[in-house]
Length: 462
Image (cartoon, rainbow, N blue to C red; front, top):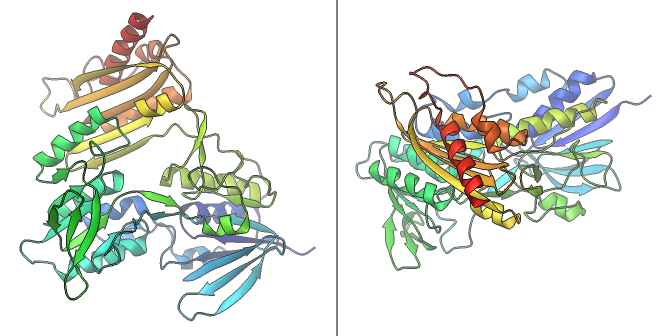
């Protein structure tokens, strides 16, 4: 009996986790695995790129979990610098292009995994392709940015403009400050971190300005200005302002890289992400799976499909896909939208719904915001911490939590993530038996204080 052929498109978290899990379940005599990766690197932590750029991580290779050679040693035929340019679903084959030689070839498959990831949003602006303008999504992107930064290393008065103030934007702002740049962050929203409600984003804004990062809200970028060599020299806004720049980093966000899937007629959601079932099979296609930043996932709180590109999800998707390909069974039930970040000493976390998410879902809710400290107030490491909580009217069901504060704040969001997954009410959250000692928490943990205030708000609202 001929062995099955698995083709994996994309060699990072979801794709190679899927390939590795499938190999654990089926040996090379049963399953041949060929994986294609368009970049120079595989199985790396994209989330770690800002910390490599900023110098907290010593070297690029520290972000690589498994090299191509290590994958090949496990009988996975991993082909680097090879891009899949066409899917022939009726014929069960993919067309590839070697990005160094330009040669093309067809490869057949019995099972297909699409893990094409996401790409930085690049607005159509004059000068967007100038030298010194960088998106940061892949390790190749990070290397190109690092090359640009190192060319001016040691130069006085270096200036950077970050366009966008989401996770990538604020993390890259911190990284550029660490490298000695004067940093300006331009973003269109009322406050940075649109993943938070504006009142919590205002805390981030104030902290970034205190750190010396000029953060300009309501700034619509209209043009990248260049010098006579075609290199970036400034960023212009609709208000007529110009912000000098030696380097520009795009932190506007990412979008699913799904052109292949679209051209092949695979089902896509509202955000353009591939739609799958709980086993990560592409809907309507028995032998095609997809995972990682190119798919939409179920939001367990709002009950809708959303594009939430995170490495934690991608690795879990890969495990589920590999189990299915290898003849096992696993599912990915969905997410509650948990994410953490930091800018300098400020920690930022959220899970569940923001106010506008809850309104869009047709939910009626109350909010509760409290100020506390990360440890007992008298303990020398105590830092300020603000917690905002959303709860559904009448039922008291927890809908979302946002946290902004000093060291020790962000990971408290995991308490809320578990509570959201379990469908707990704020009354039940108040009763959680959390650990306490002065170096770790006040007697009443700030999450419990916020839940207690939310209980009062639910009762007052009737």
